[in-house]
Length: 423
Ligand SMILES: [Zn+2]
Image 1 (cartoon, protein in one colour):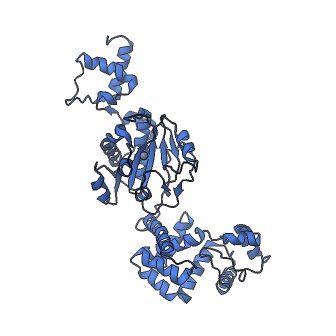
Image 2 (image 1 turned 180 degrees about the vertical axis):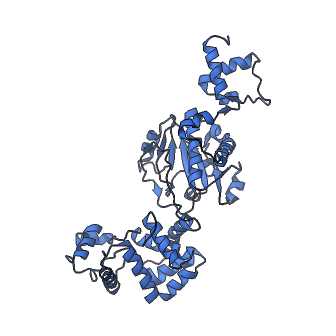
Image 3 (image 1 turned 135 degrees about the horizontal axis):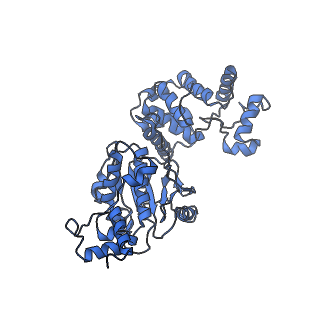
């Protein structure tokens, strides 16, 4: 019995239970992914047209006996894209003996292991002892899959896929990348690399330079003409858009290495310095960043405030590092408004992550009392009233120009102002 929620998780569990090291399983899976996308019914694309079959139709025709040239048609098929006639014949016989479809996932992983133990003993030995992903991946490529192109570029690409599986499954059972449930609009952009090649350990917040909704942002990045994207868009109204899934790398920060490890977030902002964002967008951003950290097993958001320090920093297992676009390109992004709040964002999110009892959505607003540090932080709807009280010397704050007024107090003052009590 295969256990796991997804094909890749089932394969991972099967291979590691068969005695492969995490590097070995990842190295084999990276190659299988390159061959078939881990789809057991996958018929080599060029043969779909040639034979006039889809993956499903080909599989059904082989199973029913309507198509009899399976072994000798020269078409790659299945997880490993078996092509050579004796190997395909053996796969079919293996499936028939078990009374299962030739495209059955469990049959194919059983057959794969059977082949490795019978005919590729050195490859299997490598996979059971491999301490690096590269040695496992290269061994499968050169000795088991043996594609025509075994160049350094192909090796690197397959080891890259392997790294993704390793990051996803090694040491953390049944934990896989997901997307935020806070998303209110989804429009997946083609501007991405799938999958990302590094585990998520970074968050990069950007300003989108436009007071847009999440939908406007997602729709904008949906065009291939843009050649850019982000994992999430936070709208001026607090809407949250999914543009590139977390498992994939967005084209956002002018740095491939940053974007392979980062979840990138574009926040609706004003179009001029300091690129301020609305209170709704800021609140939604905090919620989203907290959710991303939580789902990715992070309990601390880290802002070091320095490019060299940050790029040299290796986040601990429970840490999520913050980086900014301006470190990778001659840009103001994320704008002074958000940049100057990075320390506050890190502190607030970390605080939320360390709270053991999570308030439910219904009472969250009451429990999360908002505090505005400076007069400039007070939302414009409250600002007049607060300014009047400050001008009268009735509100002096806590020194250094800091007011630290709560939203409740702002609201109270605004009501008093409307009643004419502050004039
Ligand atoms: Zn940016």
